[in-house]
Length: 303
Image (cartoon, rainbow, N blue to C red):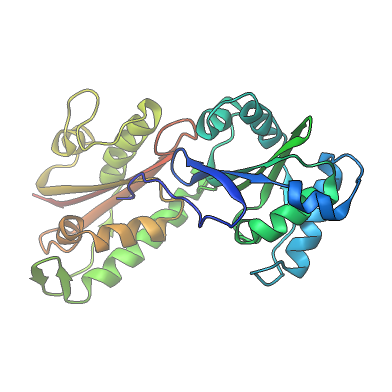
């Protein structure tokens, strides 16, 4: 299971403040005054010119990082978020109000800039690693007086609903490959065991729980109606002898969800149970929920 945590960047030399908000969200505050003294007067910065200048840097590289990063793409929601950040909202609140859910995001505030040249020079010098992150592909900009706010974000990209067959096939292959090898799950040594096969009734049970967690923004084996996996499986019409469930949230790819289960001792033991013969796999996406995407894997053996 992917846990929520705080992530911050290394503190560059000219940072005057650093605060972190939600998962993968960072606010960097910089001063451009010393740079401007060297550069002299410069035309006022605007979104289009800043974007073009930053993309030039991403192509050629900056102080600590090589070039070759793809061009940033302007996103009007991030422009809204930077304006809200300028109003004093925390980064997570600003992004939520702007209806932009990132996988990760950084808003850089430049204090005392007077033009595109000085602004970009400051970012390239003091936040090169952030600027060159390949995953940060979306861009937003807001200027107010001599201060500017620039958003860099990695978009939250999840499978589409019509990709469920592909996701099920991928997870089935990964699970059966894992079950085919003896495995150490924490303190337990488990022998290799036989494969499982997809089952439509177990999928229905998994899908109902994934949808419920996504729509109501919670993460638990117990549904909001109080039901557990055994009751959901029974309601789906699966007459079972053995049943089990793994859940995960926040992982944007099936491979990452499965690896998380394998790396977790208790989930690994569940995945390796020799008694299971069937599996159902489902996911549900709600960008406004806490987890964003929810994965449910249900195992069973019929009577």
